[in-house]
Length: 397
Image 1 (cartoon, rainbow, N blue to C red):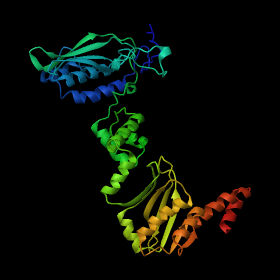
Image 2 (image 1 turned 60 degrees about the vertical axis):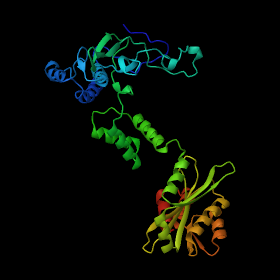
Image 3 (image 1 turned 135 degrees about the vertical axis):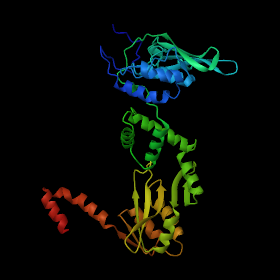
Image 4 (image 1 turned 45 degrees about the horizontal axis):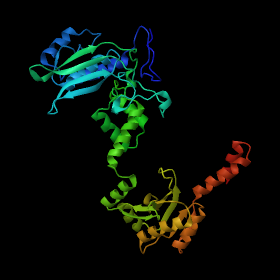
C-alpha cells in the first residue's frame, strides 16, 4: 500500500515496485567499504570475508565492535546504502566534559519539516516559499554508543527497522552521498585555474573514477566555495588591487564621487621593456563581455620587427566616450615616456580617434583593414541574391 505524503513534501527518491535497481547504491557501498575496512576490528575484518555472500558485499554493522564513532557511522551508512537508503546523524549526547557518549542516526527522510534550527512547523498558508522537502518523518533509527568497560570501542544498535517510503533507485539524489574527496577538490581547483568548463571537469573526474556519482551542480558548488575561500571575505576588486600591489605591477585607477572604481589601468613588467624596444606601431581596440560589470576593456597591442604581436597594457573603462579614451591614452603616454609611438591602428571609433588626436597630436592614425572588411561584409551582403555573386564581388574587392 502506498504511503501518503505529508503536506507538500516530496521525497528525493524514485518509487519502485518489486525489484529495486541498486547500481548506484552498490557503487556508494563499495566506495565506503574501502574506507571502512581500515576502521574495522581485527576479528570483524577476518570474519567478514567468510560471512558475507557475493550478493551482500558489506556485513551487518549491528552487534559488532567498531574502533570509533566515525567507523560505526560509516559502517551503518554503507550497510543502508546498499539497501537503497541514506542515513544522517540526528543528534548526540555528551558528558559534562564534552565527550560524546551516544549518537542517534535517522533516515534521510526522517524528521518533519521545520524541525531543525528550532523552527516550528509552517502551515501551507503561512509559508513564504512554496518549496518541497524530503522529510517524511520516517521512523527508522539507530543508535551508536560506547561499549561498556571500553570507552574506545563503539557499537551500533538498530532501534526501528521500518521506513514509510520506498527505497531510492538512485542515491545520487542525496548530496551527502556525492560528497567530494580531497583528490576531487584538488582536480577541480587545478582544472578551474586552467580555464576548463565544469562539464569538462566532470568528464575528467568520471574518467579517473568510473564509480563516482558526482553531478555537474557539485562542480559549480565546489568552484563557488573555492572562490569564496580565495577571496577571504574581500571583494574581487580588492583582491585584484592587492595582487597588483604585491606583484609590483604598474597600475593606476580613477574613482567616482561615491568611491566606485570607474577606470583601471595596468601593465605587466615584461611588456614595458618590449614596448620601449619596439615603440613604432601600436594597435588599440576595445573588447567586451570580459567582466560581470560590463565595462569595456581597452587592449593596447605592440608589434615587433618580426611581425610578432604582444600585449602592452589593459584599461577597464566605465564607458567609451572621448573622455574615457583620453584618460586611458594619457596613462599609455606616461608609460612610453619620451619615446612615443609613430603609428596607431584602430577601427573607426570616432571617440577613440578624437582622443588620439588630442593625446598624440603627431601620431599617424590608420584604420584596421580587418575591421574594414568586416564592415564591407556586413553592409553589402544583403544586396546580393546568391552566395556565388557575393563571393565573386568580395574576391574582386
